[in-house]
Image (cartoon, rainbow, N blue to C red; front, side, top):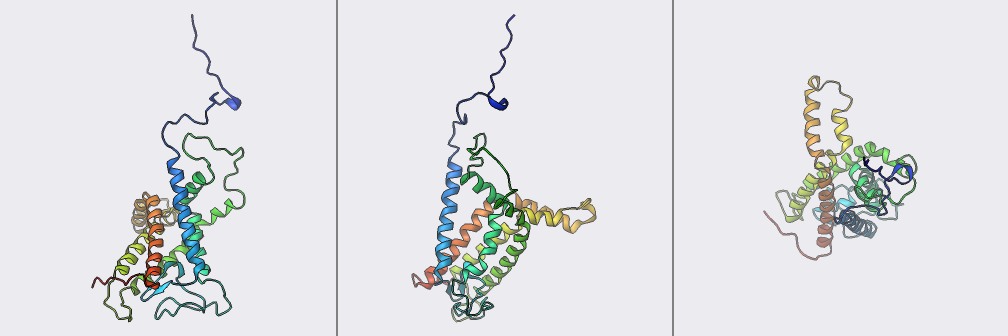
Length: 268
């Protein structure tokens, strides 16, 4: 009576398959698109952060340069210009505050998955073996710094509040009179909505709202907040990309206005 043959196995009990994977789809498209998207933003943001110019066109201030904490900042009347660093800061003022939202995004759970897969191929895709022989997780430098994500969340919330103040100021015209709405106002409003949605959809925010509670029924307000944040959390990836794009577009819009590429169209 014939018996079923035992399956051949390779080292450590793995199947003896010569190929790295058996996937037939274009699995590499997602990590490749992530590399292109993140690199494009990094290159653009680095150029604008070090430019130290063309970041203010009344009443709009670039989100990369707000708040402006150096004495060398442009004259932003009634805007977030607080020269706390005095005149000794010789670099671009964007480098003072930009580290906070950058740290928030670098340690974000979604972005971690994105750059782990795309840049480090750890792993590049589901059912595709990674090329690394050893894995230490986030227990060593620099990846251990990702454990500070919850603290960067608080900093990101402060940044979002400042950008909200900037958005309110865009309802003025170039002479700082209220009752104005230009195309930039609409762009800044969409941007701050996406920034808040991404910030509040953060896993750390979800934990703050509902973490360590043994009974939701005894905390109805926190339960409602947790439910709302949980719904946003389901769209965290999309909000991460949308807010990243809106930040770059808002900065680009201010740059084009500041360089007189065109005049801000007035909606009313």
